[in-house]
Each structure stands twice: as structure tokens, then as C-alpha cells.
Length: 258
Ligand code: ACM
Image 1 (cartoon, rainbow, N blue to C red):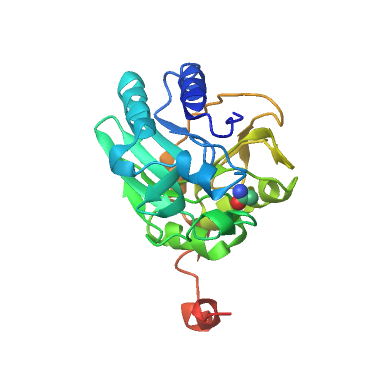
Image 2: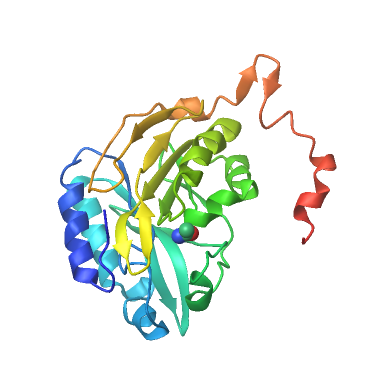
């Protein structure tokens, strides 16, 4: 989808219309900041479109959709807590709001509006399946994908507003492959001011195959059926396993500040 900047109600209506095209989906992933839009002109505009999770019209709307279609939804969310803003992703189920992730790696002008994430890299068990969330530019950091795989994530949901053509869409299959997980990158399209977003959302499997890919410049709601057990088989050969073959005592530099 192409969220409209500062038009929260319009964006809510678009989401309802698109989810209605895939009424049987169990898990729906929406783009980054798709309640508010992305390319804020001012801090005031960023604040005006943000909501507290506990009192969010947008999350109530997602909850109603989860109940209507009996699904879980992961959505980008311009989150306010006190006077701080976070570029967040929320997980909502038919039973209610389940949890959030706050983007760790802020991209370009996001540094002017948002506080970096402070709630770690949680993985949520949604019944028969474990999911983690990352947001857009987080894709550049192999550490975060791995940490979620180590916590047993089967699927990583990746709301995005990508602007550099071709990079992330090439990396996501590789993160899938080396962690043996499914990844759902839901990337917006369209233009806001001086930014054009690259679309081409994709779903990848634990062998790095692209299961489906949306277009670059139009709305699409695409669903695929997956076998979650494929993410539980971490063997590359009968003698090689992507988790057990690691040599963490040689990786200490990874956790030292740069
Ligand atoms: C991005 O992190 N929205 C490029």
C-alpha cells in the first residue's frame, strides 16, 4: 500500500479494504509507519499522527480486523510514549494487542523524529508459530536476524518503507537462507515529498526462495501458504546445522561497540 502522510483515517480504510482481499490469511503484515506515513515535514506533524499504544484508535481498528478475519496482524506504528516517538511495529491478535518492537536502527531523517528502540528483540509465540519483528533499515544488521532465529523465531515480519532500489530485496532471501526462517517484508510504494519508496514486498522461505513478490507501484494483498516446520529444520546437510555449527567463542568482536 501507499500510506498517505498524516491521513490516519484514510490509511485505516485502505488497510481494511486490502485485508478484505485475503480473508483467509492467518497472519497479515503491513508496512512501516502505515498509520501515519513516513516523511514528516515537522516534529509537530510526527507527533500529531502518533498514538499511545494503550489509547490508540489505530490499534483498535486492527483489533476489529483481527476479530473479523480471525487473523493476527503486524503493522508499522508511529508510537508515542510521553513526549517520545518510536518507529514501532505492533502485533495484534483476535484476543487483543500482544506486543511491540521498537526500531533499533533509525534511517536518515528518522533520527530527527524518533528515539531508538529500547525494548530488545522479542519473539512472540502466537500458537504453533513464533514470530519476531524488525523494521526496514534493521535489515542491514545480520545480528538482529540471528538473535531472533536463536530465540526460535519461525517467521520474521518486516514492515518497511525502503527507498534504496534493490538492496534489501536482494538481502532478505539471504537472511532467510542463513537463518533458515521465513521472512515477510511488507514494503510500501509511492512518493512522499523527495522520497520514492520501492515496493516489491516479498515472502521468502528457509531455503532463500522467494515465494511471492508484489509489484513496485501499486496496491497488492498477496498470501502464500507455508509449512512452518521448514523453519525448524536447521540442517544444511546431515552433518551441518546453522545454529549448532556456530563458533561463538570466536565472535566476541560482534558484541563490542564499534
Ligand atoms: C527505512 O529504514 N525506512 C529505509
